Length: 510
Image (cartoon, rainbow, N blue to C red; front, side, top):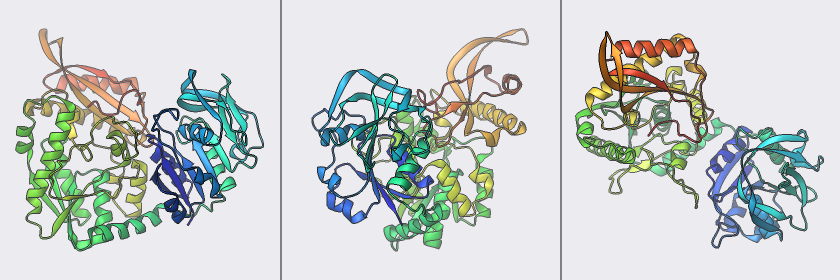
């Protein structure tokens, strides 16, 4: 099996590069930028990608790779920071100043014979995100493409064995990005494209068995696709040594607990039901800060699991459905990466936790997890379900969490979901939900003045949760949802809609 190594210089896109490579049926593996050259050789890669990163190659102590990398006879692709690093190591000049470029940028190909641009149009739009730029290309390299502002956008040596791209081909905003990566894999690295997610399942089964050994595992099921697929995968590896706990934390949607338990019966998972809603609500009393909410919920989950796990002989592991977007937004392991927020599965776990954490899905994106679920015969009503955050309605009920406000949010959210299902739009979007705001506005109902809270509608489309755009819902649907919520949900007199993409926002409000 061919293998592509990705040397992580701290970019939040690093695992997205790995995902794109896997989409092209080539196995990929991520290593830190300072990995030893012997380790790289042991991996026998067909090619190496040097990722982007948030730092400047001109800074002291910035991530770098060994010069010996270029003597291994292996094709190398440098992306963004990776191109600048190649320039520095190979004798070129990297500068900074006024030529900063962020977002969509038009580029023009200078060398149409370059293997990396085989079959690509002469001009197209790419996604840039850099402050530094190339002042002087290394002696053994030549210019392949430049931006309309004259900034070098791509370079390579004579046969394209060493190639640098100033833009990000891995993001959906770059036109022909997947074709460019395919050219690197198949025309330059000569990969076969024989890797698939079915192989990943078999390998992960072995990894889980080796990691857990003879211990038992407790899984914190939520009813969503992530934890469910993690449980079915782990059950495949461990059989009866997996026992699941479904916790009602008081932060679930309307009718959630009953529906979840019924679905798990059909999957033949061993599930212990725990109603800990009062415990969670006591822990969250008076808390309004989003980070505090997440961490309190994460710790309370673990404490509930530990108490329940004491009843399970040999339970030493806590299985979670953590995915890659959760990891990178919490600050992933790549050195120099930025933290966006603590995630319930990542940033909220206490250090003195008695259970070790098992996260078999942490290198995957949501669409990959759904595909694995299909391969594992997980029912479609779980696979195609919209994502629901681990902290539940806590991150959608802004301000203090009290039962009355949560009930209000549950009722509004149920109406929104019901109308989306009725119009047939549910499966055409990534996620849709309501957010209850700690804002009161004046209204009038039945000739009487009201002073009630506001609900925001949020609907987004996305491929992987890394970026997202708001859905242009039909006006008739928005109108009906708004009227129903104001008429049927006590305590709401105004409905607004969130029309912000990610970035600059995140999908959830907290």
